[in-house]
Length: 210
Image (tube, rainbow, N blue to C red; front, side, top):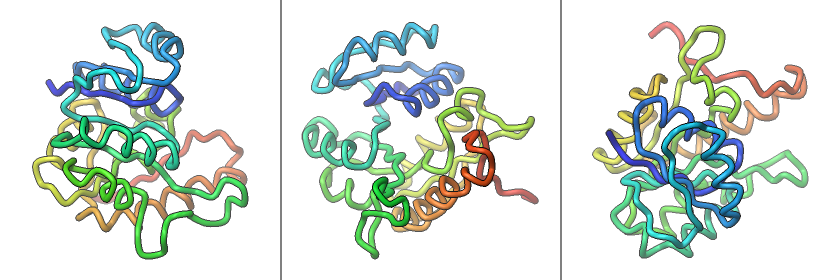
């Protein structure tokens, strides 16, 4: 099984770690707040290891489970460490002050901006259309979560597909990394819909009929 390093100790870190552990993967959680990382690992009840951002990265796949600005900053900080790694960007770069736009350039995406910062890494877009709470269980109303994935590197994409499917979800290949631009639009709309859906954050984006 693949080893996963998750950078961050928030709700998305919890959801992705829960799925990875359920799939039998090794999990390392790194955070600025090592107490938060240790608490999360304890609550997950698996064999996750923990540490501080900047410690040795043990995972073959590194998930940046952080908001966009923080993910970009950590990618830059760990540029050399992430060289050769599969780096998963999960962010939706929403302007949270106005909640009416994405903050990335109109012809780019968070994933592409991160890829520019870590050119020696293999960046994959995934998990941005899934909410943290739904990831804990991996399904909604008996349906597996769909995880839409975009990447330019075929081996990196295959590694993330394997992680997703072994963890009890369905992976859908959305194409090259430039498709992250559209995926982030989908993620943004999914977030924006929550007000009229009761703010439960328990919905999912699902492709049916295939």
